[in-house]
Image 1 (tube, rainbow, N blue to C red):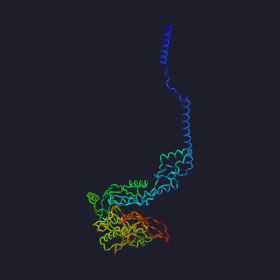
Image 2: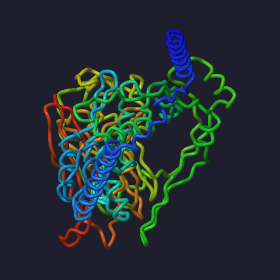
Image 3: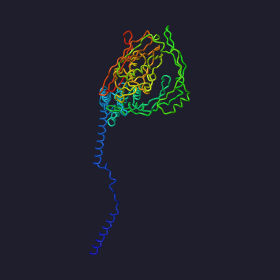
Length: 522
């Protein structure tokens, strides 16, 4: 009995050990194959996420739809649109135009200030007829977000909220007038180029050698000024004048010889009809061309080539005023007769001009007729303006002769070819009625645009410089009036204009702008 119990206990122990071993050999199944969808809780979470996403999507669609409707009905400029960097968001076309126009006007200067070393000048902005095309820019702005289908318009409107749209404004200006103003400034630079030239003085051909100098770089300055106006960066700013070195043309003795050589021709006229046939002096070098060229090899400022002049038997000046029956115009200015040196200069210049006959279509050049103002020619030292100061200069005062002639020419209704104003308003005429000259750089020229020759008579005596222009009046002759007045001023400058008014039978039939001028104040 006891033996049976022992055997039974051993058997139970063996069974227990075998069970433990079998459990160690069982396969292990990890949780990675666990499916959340297989549980009710996981299914509920996924459903909630889907509902949230769907809600967000519906809200976005709803918001976009509302935005689309609002944008469709919006007649104003959409948000995020700028014109010339000016925010015009949510403005009507008229409001945007007013805002942009006011901004432009507030940021444009009255005058474009220019400077070259110590020389300062300016160009009136009004003379350039600057136009900003604000209407086109505003029309472009108002069309943004409205020119495609309703869906794309909304996309565009949303886009401008994050990335602003800037519209530029096209401008136009009178580039020809700007170039003309810069050319005028170039001729007045204190260190401008002096061109070589020549004139005849008695039996001599005087050839003057030019000097290199600075001239305005026209193309660069036009571009600079146009950009400055377009970008509204010129107010309260002084632009340095861009210049470039220019050398005078080489003296071409062969060309000069071709221009001056001619045979003499006697002058005559007829009275029925009135016709003047001018005299022409014959001219030739008194030396050979090779000798003249050898003379130019010397380094001199002036060369004197002797001439062999063949005078006609009857000159045009000998014809007399009977060939010029009508007084076309006259003009006088006063001078100080006690200033002897200045009076001498006036008389020398006037004597050169007195008796000059200008044929139809012919152009008068003051510098060529009067010649260079030199000591050898008899000119004296007298007050002149240099860089804003009154100093003594050779030939001082002769611009009074130029200005007096200028006014006589205006009243004769002759065509002005070249004329420049002084730096300061002179004492003998009012603003815009003057004409300055500088030999080699600034000339006064006019053209006889009449069908009959004219004769210029002048005198300087007793404190009065007088010019008279004779010719032949026509049936449709104009009455000429000159109107000049100051248009504005600053602390340093005076602005003026002059007009030539034509009348017939007392009625105005034409008006011509002669000039717009800027003068420095003393």
